[in-house]
Length: 138
Image 1 (cartoon, helix red, strand yellow):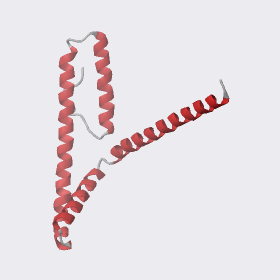
Image 2 (cartoon, rainbow, N blue to C red; image 1 turned 60 degrees about the vertical axis):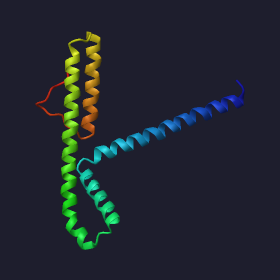
Image 3 (cartoon, helix red, strand yellow; image 1 turned 180 degrees about the vertical axis):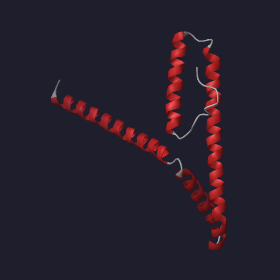
Image 4 (cartoon, helix red, strand yellow; image 1 turned 135 degrees about the horizontal axis):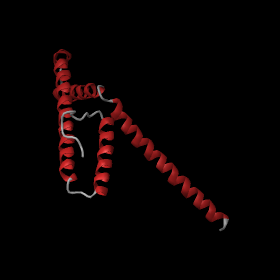
């Protein structure tokens, strides 16, 4: 192999490595943001509502003061709805998996359990909690 080809290969591998590292850091930062925004998510949502309505409706400072409690309460309600909906989605998927399990081979059941384990791990990282009394994966 000549020197020019070796240099091109090294540069190519370095570019692939850097691209992978950058992708990993962006994905990691996005995931970390979701992990860290459990409670602050409500504040972000409330602030987004404040900002949009203040600019779209040209609200006065007095109107904003009165509306602030409404935005905070609504953001809390929306977060509760999101959490409840996520729990229902997880319960529904767990029920489907439970129903499917009886028709699967032992190898397929093992794969399904692994899928359930990964989904549970990911959902816990997102701040969702499965209903302890709900259907459990097979």
